[in-house]
Length: 288
Image (cartoon, rainbow, N blue to C red; front, side, top):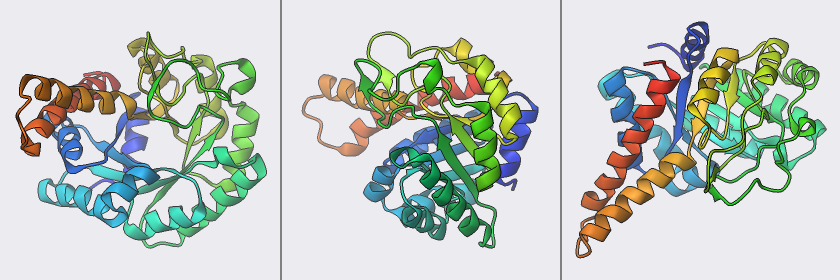
């Protein structure tokens, strides 16, 4: 089976992107996998620190690995938004295919130091592990938003600068980089999220020389997604949008069946709603 590194490289060459979707239980995993398998597309399963703590770090890897082995399918794990070297190490030791060190809580110099430490630890393993870092502030919460979070304002000064990104990649050796290009974590309650700076994406991809990841994909327009992928985005993160679909599917079922107490019945409604959203996004990212 191809490695995640190979899958992302091939996607970039084809001017398409791989979908990355977060889970916090097995039903969400099945919904994402069912959508990907139906379309015959690779997919990445993300799990933040909170999601990993809820499911279990090793258990998260085991769940995805069991599907990969049973179906011989390109489904991969990513330790999303990890805030310390210790927790990056924990995820690598547990068997994740990729890890993200999120240095938004520390200064630039410390971001470089810890990211490099994560890369060195990953390289010392006997398997291929991708290390991703963030450069630029796009907020930190996957939830429905009334407005743009403080510190993540979409201005020219807040966007990642090509020269800084090139220096960061060179200093750390990261495999993937997630920049600030007008995106933000979370999903606006009223209307679409802010537009992306497509020109900046192209400049950053050329400057950094490594695949780029678009975080905060929920709420972005289809037009911006396609343009961003053409400009150099190889992996797209979606979380809030599928969380909302999952919640709304369960709520609708329970509203129609208020006496239902069997979790597998109302959770299935959430899974099915999530699966539909994942399928739509995967088609868009792969130009299907």
